Length: 345
Image (cartoon, rainbow, N blue to C red; front, side, top):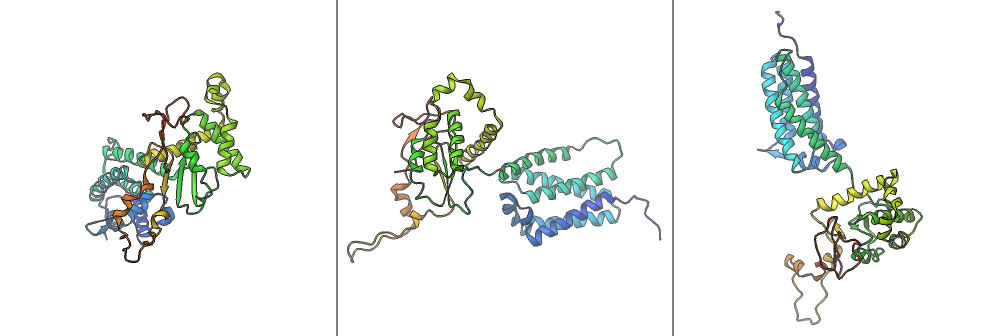
């Protein structure tokens, strides 16, 4: 039997086999072990013309492996180039939706396979691949999105399992302080601090120390506000400004940036910002019984939700003033940091 004169592309075959095995694993198990971002859930069941991405990946890597075994690198190179171009489109879609870590792994295996077949086909002195460079840029941006998604908002209190209410508050905001006064009534809430200015950072740092000693959140925030000097002291004393450069304070500012970024990413520029994970309990409460027996009970339809007065917003203060949120009667204007608006009646 005559042996083929073409060299066997072992690297490309190994990459194709790895891609095939990974797609099979994700298709049959869901790939939850590596599903660290929301994008994995989004693209796990995505289908195009009834075919899932993982089924397409199984077919693709099987074809590339067969072409490698048949020592047909040119045909495999063309197929891998088409697959890499399609993956670049998918990476672009993930920029505007959510990055999928499993998809990024598959895309990386496609890129390795493409470069391996390209190396087997083209001469040693070859120009750089524009397609691979474009794909790499998109990959780096999506990896940044993965890191961002893994950086959850920070709260000074111990994490609560399945908190149904997330509250983002500033210790300088009167509406936030009113909400803090009802902390015990919001037993299932998770509280995330967001600073309005440099003084708030010091207040949150002091508040965090008091929380570690077991002080309730509302009391800790109130005591911290009293302990930290007023805003004028930061202009007169450089130690406050230089103190923000300490490692512990830098770490705190990074955590608070994550909280602030979450509020802005949610489309809000006001505090307090409240997120409900599910149906709020007060919306699920039954309507009061009618006074008269012959009076029909109001119909419980979706149109009633728009008539609930408690969904309005009361209170407003500007985050760009010299002393944020100290004058509740001040007129609203666009602040440089973050505005605050009460979500109370």
